[in-house]
Amino acid sequence: MCETVFQGGGRPGRGGPGTGERLYYRTAPAGGGRTNHNGRAHSTVTTHPSPASMPDVSVVIPVCNEEENVLPLAREIHAALAGKYSFEQIFVDDGSTDKTGEMVLAARAQGMSEIRLLQHVVRSGQSAAVATGVRHARGRWIATLDGDGQNDPADFPWLLDALMQSASPRLKLVMGNRTTRRDTWLRRVSSRVANGVRAWILKDGTPDTGCGIKVFDRDVFMHMPRFRNMHRFMPALFQREGYEVISLPVNHRERMRGTSKYGLNNRLWVGIVDLWGMSWLIRRASPRVAIREER
Image 1 (cartoon, one colour):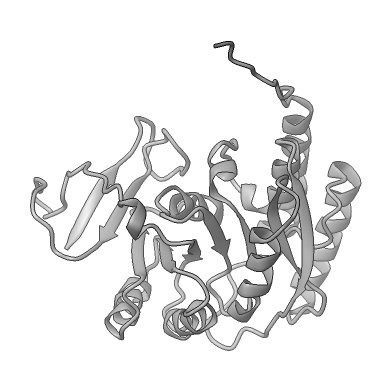
Image 2 (cartoon, rainbow, N blue to C red):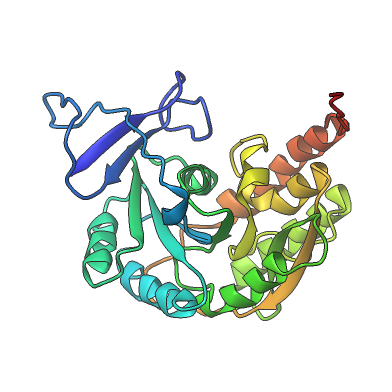
């Protein structure tokens, strides 16, 4: 069954709370909900799981035209986390034109019942897809990775243990650091330049802020501002809120299936332009205020 959920009152497809983003849920058949002439439900019902059904970890995977990668990636995630944590896999299909959504459902039918599928009606970008997945996640801890198979799900336990077992209550984000890149020369060069400029401007102390694999606290993320390409600035955003960020080495693999969606124009130049907006946002941060209630 497809169920369409309308959120907010703004224009559709922009992502983030209150922006009118529209999602397709593909879920098990359920009653209720009116449909229009296209058979799309207008239901705005949101299911709030009981505490007993809440997993420890919600894995959010943004995907766009990754039909060849979905099934093997889902299997790897399942193998990495099964028996270690209770978890769910949330695939957010960002307006794919291939069979990505069908392959997600096929993966769930192969015994991975923890898989959920959310679909953007229009392509909205990776940051919007991540925000959508986090917003609808049931777990306290969020784990994300790219949908192209280059991040290794076997690194998740290493990152999650560092976050969940930390002695510091201020540690809320653990970033992956791809010490050995398995990318084309263009992606390596553009990332190196962008990371260098970013480190100079933001001084976030993170060697690989563009790494797709990371784990963080959902509640902190939900209080952050939303904007296009925010996923590239997660360390600076967490630090802006007063939290600690660490980076740990992770594996990086060559893309075995499909084609990259990134090039010089939508990776290097866009990232550098976004830096100036991020720098302004940090300078405009409101001071944290301690509150005491008298009883």
